Image (cartoon, rainbow, N blue to C red; front, side):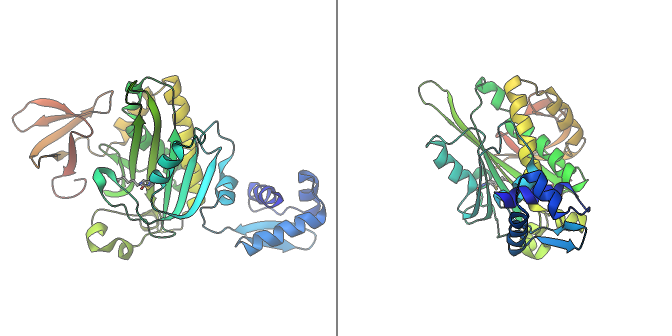
Length: 334
Ligand code: BTN
């Protein structure tokens, strides 16, 4: 525990040195306990510089999705992430949480994994999650709100995540309708929301929100086909992004979203979605489940995040998530 508090204190100091005495005083530890904590942190991969008469400062952290590292960026949250489970490897963080949900784990539990061996995407697609490359995060929510309020939760999550990526990277992604985050016209992040309802009453048992953000992949990691439509933060920004810092920002954003959903305070997510949506103004193809394709002009987003389109014959129609998927005319977005 003293390791965690020493780490948090050093992080809060940024580039400044902190003397061993001040650390000991502020945390109520002995000098020997401070030294032991610093030594243990170094063994875990933290780079801690020590200077005579100045003390210690943190100059490097391991890029790991451990509870300690994520918490050192997290700060207090109302609910989401209070219970945080960090796994090295799992089939799928969504599947894991769905099983745990039935055992009564707390509302707001967040699960991360460094590697998923059976990551799942929408429509039963495989979601690739090689070790150390992504932030894979799932969150369990049990909001006590009317079910209608949850139909837009994935689109609202997309907006919340744009904010989290912007906070950590300084660049705001856009949203390809309905809920893929894109940068430079390529997919950066996918979201898979799964819910369980009680058969008799229709009451929500739980909702699991799963998010995968590409962070450290290179084009070679994606392979030639996927590299055409997918990108990573490292590829876009040309610099290293801290996965635990991003995981913490995502958890904070979901914590705010959860409170907003419970209060029914979600109009600003629609407003932000309209600003962030890269699909608007584009000519798109609407792909129906039965394989039909129609060309349309994307005009606007309605208050339930439906896409308002004008078809080739001039009719204006609103399409909803699940009903059709949208592609650009030539590529993933355009
Ligand atoms: C999609 O783009 O189709 C959605 C991808 C969702 C991937 C995330 S990664 C964390 C969570 N666990 C999974 O198995 N899937 C989601």
